[in-house]
Image (cartoon, rainbow, N blue to C red; front, side, top):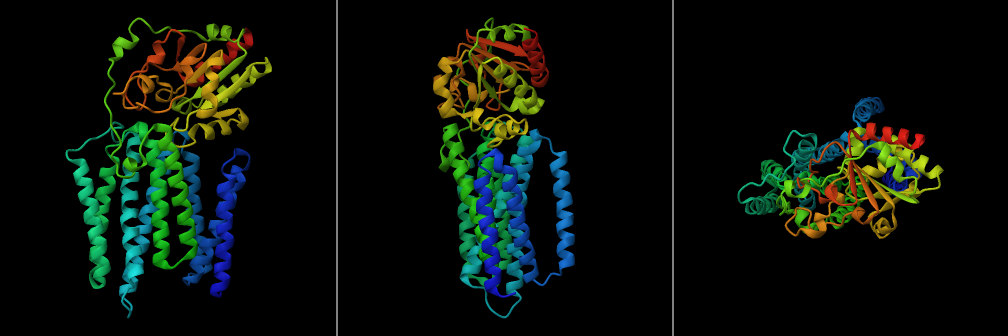
Amino acid sequence: MSSATINLIYLVAAVMFILALKGLTHPRTAVRANLTAAVGMLIAIIVTLSMAGISLMWIIVGIVIGSIIGAVMAIRTPMTGMPQMVALLNGFGGIASVLVAGGALVMELGGAEIPTSQFLIATAVSGLIGAVTFTGSLVAFGKLQGLISGQSILLPARQLTNASLFIVAVLLSAWMVRSPDSSEWILLLLTIVSLVLGVLLVLPIGGADMPVVIALLNSYSGLAAAATGFVLENNMLIIAGSLVGASGIILTQIMCKAMNRSLTNVLFGVMDAGGGGSVPQDDIYAGKVKSTSPEEVAMLFDTARRVVIVPGYGMAVSQAQHSVRDLANLLGERGIEVEFGIHPVAGRMPGHMNVLLAEADVPYDQLKDLDDINPTFAQTDVVIVIGANDVVNPLARTDPNSPIAGMPILDVDKAGTVVVVKRSLSPGFAGIPNPLFAADNALMMFGDGQAAMRELVAAVKES
């Protein structure tokens, strides 16, 4: 197969990736977009492995094994575990780049020619970013899975340590380029330093900031792949890695804006750990929390003309999205305007709530982002908050010492009545109390999200 033919096939695959990214922006085209990207990747893999002289039989064997593993992971992983799986996949991408680039370096040194500077620079970049991505993703997975504390783990002199490790990694990369004959063991040292750096960058970041971390690690995995593409002189890998890296950075920037975080601080793992807030939990809740029942909430809908539902991670945990959809449909049949207020970082990964609601066939035009829904809360009769906490916490506006100070939130407290569906008064990922729960216009409907929503649907039908 000529190089012109190969590049043409790579171009077709690249176009399919771009079309897939465009299609993923809307639920109606997301499934087709996923298939388009998968076919594009299949084409690129077959062509690349064929160029390496691997027989078609082994290519098929590899695809079958990989497909089985992927299918098992997809089937066995619940929606609540999706962020953890995304973190793991980011890590797999990072370590794959390190291993492929390292293998290419060993093969290059075994040849007659000295590796070029471009080759060595690309190998060093792949080793640095790929190793940071791998261990950073494992720490993120551990925090999300509960294997590591979700709170910020602050080590002494962490900023100085991180800066020192980064400088050492850069110096090792420069040394590797200047000393090709010693590049194998220098790459090993660089990889070890980068592995440690990845752990230290993510450890200080609390669970509330995990959506930003996942988006950033996704970008890192793409950049590592692009660097490996330069190592292998593979145009397809460069294009695919660049697309992932660029889209990941854009998504990270969106997440940072939604959480009032600095992209620079995220890049260097110096996100503000914050404190526990300036007001004790007992002072906020004592004697002020009003409990309610599904029957009482159903009565609120008798005079309501506009209802907004705000989903959060609790909805994902209880798998209540289908019951939420049933409630929205029931209210819609009564002539009540129903919309969903979606915070960009609700849940544990970007777009978590959108995916859950799309799974339940909630019409996409009912989903409103923060900027669109916030101006309407003052004209909203009832807000149902199911499982959300930090993204509706007024402390973001009122307490400058809060870990979420300055973070844009959904202004649900401005609505006529706010009904919060939650198991208890326990704090969210930020670990701080929520004054909304004790507000004059707030009612707490305690219980499991799915069970509570089913009871509420039944109560509305009977009212």
